[in-house]
Length: 275
Image 1 (cartoon, rainbow, N blue to C red):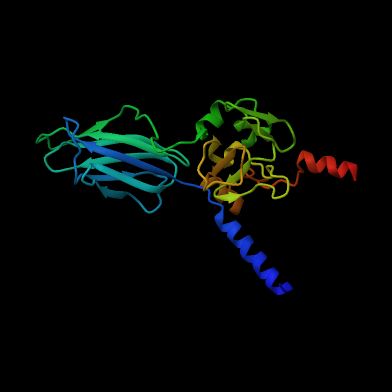
Image 2: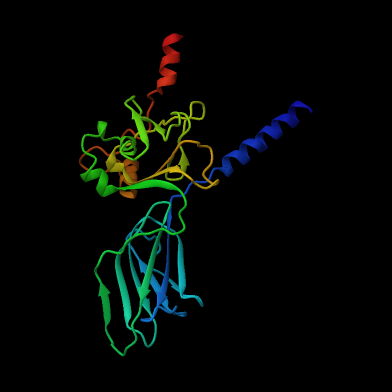
């Protein structure tokens, strides 16, 4: 095989490896509409709305089994409205769509001629029946109110508070997830793989103000994630923080002023010392 052929083959392999990496930056909402007796209701018009939803409200019609699904949703709180002629309109508030997961809800619609609407203000539990992986999602409220004492308010230090995770206090925090080494993890920010390609360690640091949610996948995750036998740390940035970094607007320095880190991993630091 000539040199040009080998170069072409290597290029194809690298392109395939790059496109093969899949990491989610969205969530889903699935649900079922039923009547008072628990029987599925087809033809229900379900509308969702949220400040996080780009392009405005979205609508779906339940199928023959009374089921509906909204895919590729930005993580955040949603309002769900269900309407069907002959049934009382229902509304659910603050339905949380998690990063990389699914919010599953059941909407019970009583019959009647009531012309108004009923708004349910109780918290809707978020249970994802489609998720087979183990892990945890850290929301912005947790980082702001509960992650007290985290070193330099670095988002990577939050992961150390999950079960089965043991972290080290290097300049850029690195982790061992359920007995794995620090080089067996994958770090993703807004769908971009930021893992050190040589050492398999974290290379980017951000403080809490630039992060909206952090998803830790500790085991049982699907093959689409790949390239990790330890854990996957998947983070979504706050759009407002990203805009502040891009424009430099505001009276104070942007929260992600040092999003990229030139600090070396512990392995590289030791290698440099030996050299």
